[in-house]
Image 1 (tube, rainbow, N blue to C red):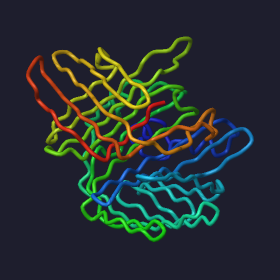
Image 2 (image 1 turned 90 degrees about the horizontal axis):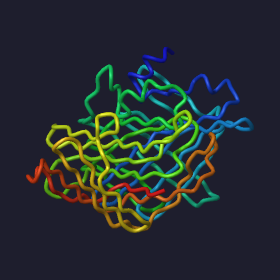
Image 3 (image 1 turned 180 degrees about the vertical axis):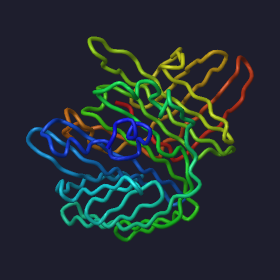
Image 4 (image 1 turned 135 degrees about the vertical axis):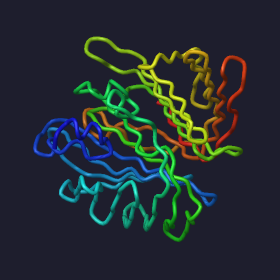
Length: 315
């Protein structure tokens, strides 16, 4: 498949050529679902090293996480319509089906979810996704794409004997691909605001590029279909960055706009991140954090609200 077509459609499987090589590579999609009953995220993907090729599904809930390995032959993909399958599990921007039984980990998960009314970021030929012009640079350590900033979720999830009703749920979909996650980064995502119908995503990471490194920022806040984008490539500057294991207090600036993010972290659960294609780095994520986002134009407050059921990783 042509590279330009894949670049314009980043939700598609980008790594077909790597299935025939023993060159390090990973690719993973992230489907986050929240409801008043609880939250759950599914992360299907593949991992390729010089020694091994495998597929996997990671799962994180409000109180646990799981990693299930699959044979690479269990991974099937389609471009039109786009979907991926890993054995009995099906993922697309419109629906997912989950059927996982793992006696060793003591889990039995069944799910049918439909995704509707997706809201996404604005794109053009210069900025085919959230990475903007960096999307055109080959061999980046890690590429990132937002597939759906916010969508409604209909359906249910059964985890062992517990049933979660998602018929009034909210979803978020993104993905990553390359060969390694950044060594240090912060990622947070929110779309369950108390007073407004907003959606929000922020990430900061140290990005290796050629013979130097730089601090990369990508951030989007959508309020009633109006998009505010703060990124390294559009002139965003980091003016406050105070984080530790428990707290986040950040302010970024672009022109006359100031955006602040504050959070007190909750207990995170272990996920596996790629290093040179291999899923062997332990990271910890919560999908039940509270995050307050404030947007100002000079001294005038445009937006100030708090979200529950937020995703948060501090690495």
